[in-house]
Amino acid sequence: MTVSFARTVILYLLIIFALRAMGKRQVGELSPSEFVITLLASELATIPMQNSGTPLIYGIMPILALLALEMLISSLFLKSRRIRKIAVGKTSILIENGKINQPEMRRLRLTLDELLEELRLKGFIDINLVKYAILESNGELSVFPFSKDQPATREDIGKKDDSTFLPHTIITDGVLIRSEIKNLNKTEKWVYNELSKKGIASYKDVFLMQADENGRVCIIPKEKKK
Image 1 (cartoon, rainbow, N blue to C red):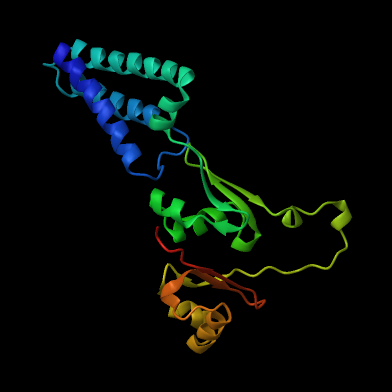
Image 2: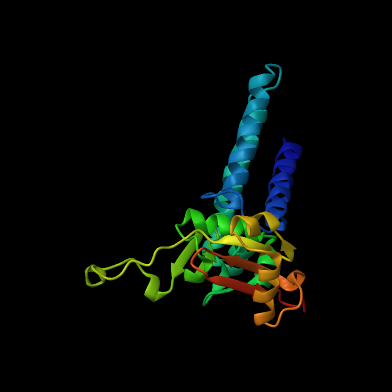
């Protein structure tokens, strides 16, 4: 029984470490510790159910051990912010004042396509409208627009409508997407001209380039690694 308890604790700590080492949160509303409890408890519960020759106590004791361990760690979280930060993680600012935090995205191993997808799910198809995008510790992305792009109030009624078009991603992390250039009815020469306006010689030096039918162009150069 002591061996079973010890193996349960080791597996718990190992999976917690593995989840944190992955860098990017994948478990939605559950914290890593809660996710591990759910995962291991369900697996441990199947052992005595699948094998009638296994005493029931060998399924009950590890689950109780997990619950006790979770309660202990939860108490430590309340007393120590540092321990909670190590086990649960912290919020990460991915966009600040309209600027993408590229080093933080690299640290989290979060791709540009994933960030853009999350922004679209939040109702933002134009990255230029985003002042702050924060990846919360529970894996959710909080998005805050610039004040001028907040939802319309009664005072805004009657103003001229400025139609918004879905931006085409022309360059993503140094890769030129020629199919999107064609969809925008543009040419590669036009892309190079837009880059030259920003003093950029090669598309390989661009982290993100987007353009829409309104003629708006967003170019974000790559930041040099320190």
